Image (tube, rainbow, N blue to C red; front, side):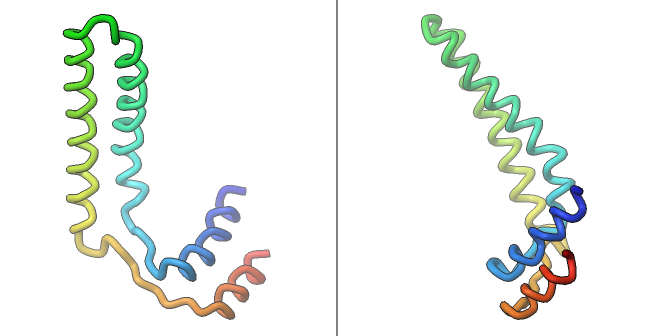
Length: 101
């Protein structure tokens, strides 16, 4: 099921954007946990609003996680072969959809 869905998205994605990220799975291994920590940190930030000193510390931790996440993504985009560029016409996209189903 997952493979079929990802192949289905591939045809439309390449038609509209003309490029595919090659390292998105590797990037997601790092970015998703950092983003999850930031979301929980934002909730914690709201909960500790009555305590300004604690809130400043939580804000600092959130900013640190965001900086790490941004650094990783910006570094990975410069890796060799980070993006595959494809030209897919509308008829090619329709053929890929028919081939998948």
